[in-house]
Length: 182
Figure (tube, rainbow, N blue to C red):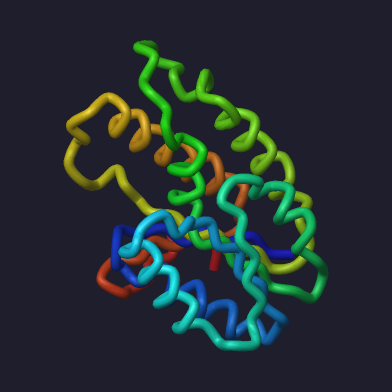
């Protein structure tokens, strides 16, 4: 039973590392994809990710109900890759408007309960779980309140999950840097 968090910037190589790690596990692999094909550009990105993965891997789409999907898909002797937590967070925040206070995200429909459900189930999941997330805190400060709220919530989510995972890896320029674990 291993839980691993792989973080990095856009195009850093984090998904590729997750795929290599899953392949090296020699276990049957399921990919939980969180992106939704809402426009042509995102559709092309999703197709590129699918084409990069081995054809025999299962793909399950879970843009929102991640904890429940993990509970259904994780099993002893299996590897599950979640790609990606940042997109899942964006889906949960979709259409939200900032409410003007320091705890806005807790007031967003479903965000707090979904994040809590994920944190609750993660330590008990059987098998090898690989979570992929963007590290968005290294870039520019977002221009809008909603953008800043998203950046803050992504950082909080990464911190919380990093404490729950046995291994945490930062990927930059395709190079992995192990932050936690061996």
